[in-house]
Every structure is written in C-alpha cells, then in structure tokens.
Length: 282
Image (cartoon, rainbow, N blue to C red):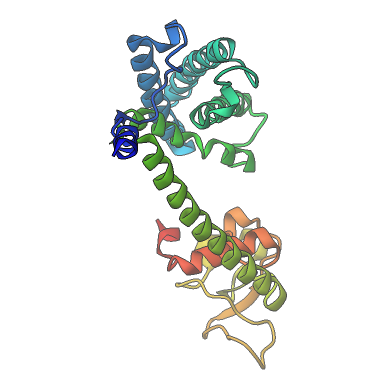
C-alpha cells in the first residue's frame, strides 16, 4: 500500500510544461527572463514576420521606401535577438553548465533564426547595392524566416500533464513525422532520378511559324503551353500554324522551372505534378 501511494505521488506532480523562454529554477532571474523582455521579443517576432512578408521585388517596385523600412526593422530586430542570445549563452554556458544553451532545443531554434536573420540582412544590403540580382538563387535563404512566428505562438502551448507523459507524446509524434518525411524524400528522389533517366530536358515548345528566336516572347507560345517532339514521325506534334522549337537559349526563369535535365529541377517538376500543378499559375 505504501508503494502504491509513492507511485501515485510521483505521477501527481502536474505542471504547465511548455516551451517557456526561462532558465531552470535554480538560476538567478536575469533581464532576459523578465516579462517585458519576453513580450518585446515576441513583438520583434511579429515585426520580423511582417518585414519578410513585405520583402518582395514587386512590393519594392510599387513602394520603394519599404526597402529602407524593412531593412531598418530587420537590423533592429536582429540586434535585439542577437543580444538576447549572447546573454543566454553568458548565463547558461554554450556547451558546459547545468543547462547549456546548445543542448536546449528551443535555444537551438532561436539561434538558427538569428542566423537566418543575419543572412537576410546581408542579402538585403547586397540587393540594394545591386551586388546580388533581385531574383537570384541566394534569395531562397530568406525562406525559413517566417518560422520565427513559432516563437510568438509557442508561449500559448501549455500542457498540464506530467513531464514524462509530454515527452512520451512528443517522442511518438516525432517518430511518425520522421517516417512520413523519409517516405516523402524517398518518393521525390526516386521519381526525380527516373525522370532524369527517362526524359531529360524538356525545352521543346510549340510556337508560331513566324516566331523569331531573338524576339521570342510568352505570347509566341501555344495556349496552353505544350511540349513537342522535334521528330515529325513520333511524339506530340504542334497544331496547324505552329512549329516545334527548342528553346535552349532561354533561361529557366523565362520558360519555367520544368524539366528533367538535372536532379534539382526534376524533383521540383515531380512536386508540381504531385500537387496538381494548379499553384504554379498563381
């Protein structure tokens, strides 16, 4: 009976087990743990999310002043997040200590977001100085920035359960997510490789008979745009008044990122086909 009471007592300790931005209970209360500082950091997360939403070439073409507004806001937010990260590393220790910074999953997430913020700021400056073009591949490094919204939302993730129960739920969920992600990557990679082996590049399009290759525009293509075969005895043939032309002289940005000439473009093409392709026309 005594053993039963002890086991019940061990499971009855309930706490709001959530991703709070605080240290362990034995640590001194520092400025990074004060309520107003945490609210300021959440506000910075919202500002950063708004900034990256406005950071598009078309938006800057219509409102050029937003280039400087978003840059200034990103710099301020990045400096604040960096200061918080340095303070937490100083208090907790980077690798050694009771609760090292790099051994905490939420701290790892915060550090990665700070890294992406610095990359975004440097990239923004290079774009304004015309060192990097507007639609360069480097701009994809800005894509993970909206994940900073998790920092604002995670404060509401509270669970009144035993910590061991929460850890068990997270462990099972993470294993299922891992299996689904692994299957997705296997599916995309497999069919991407098959596409490279079977089809190769898809650069043959139907155009008007009067089309000049040097003055080629999107209006010269068939509606809907179709791929064709250069061999008149096989494959899809263009309708009357049009001919098949290989557009190897056009960049992927002009003719679209569709084809199987390399593994990266092939995986993207498989993803378009798997998602019914409707979103690519938006």
